Amino acid sequence: LGIPCPHKQFVSVFPKILLSTMVLEKPIVIDCRDHLHGRLASIVAKELLAGQKVVLVRCEEMVISGSLVRNQTKYAQFRAKHMNTNPERGPFHFRSPARIVWRTIRGMVHQKTARGQAAIGRLSTFEGIPHPYDKMKRKVIPAALRVVRLKPGRNFCKLGDLANNVGWKHKELVDRLEDKRRAKSEAFFQKKKAAAALKAKAEEAAAGELAKVNETLAAAGY
Image (cartoon, rainbow, N blue to C red):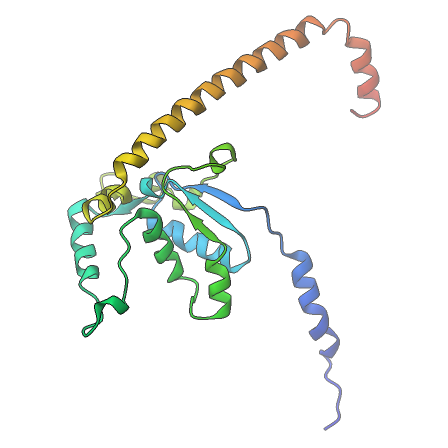
């Protein structure tokens, strides 16, 4: 009727406010070891939909509540689901832990929409910790940790063991590569500790000489 909308001025401003206040970090690397499968997946799905890039490493160390036998039975029922006339058309049953996790998260982001496709494109999943993520800071999600969420005494199984029992053929290879990575990481950490000890010793030896300098810096706010 020609009456101006009282909220018209906010319609064009709101997207700008939303973009300016959304805080996104660099790709977050999450170590999946001892996290519950579903809880981790739901949290990661929310982050992906918000625009955050996420990398999941050590997917084979993720855990699922319930015994291995129970989860194998559930996976067997899942494998029986296929197109009646032409099974090659799907649904497809992944066997590697990384793809199992990827498929779980895909189901949580409305992947048949453009927004969902963009979200799943921000996700990367890996078995083990490949380069360059072995040199990057890895994080955990406390709300999804087994020790926090699962009642003591309850059964659980590792995703890697389940995958190995249903047809994944690379468990031994990943274990071997992980042993090499851990040995290399331990050597680096010992070298870093030795360098830190030498630095602390040098600072202690020069403490008397630097006393006046430190006082001047402290007065300047450093």
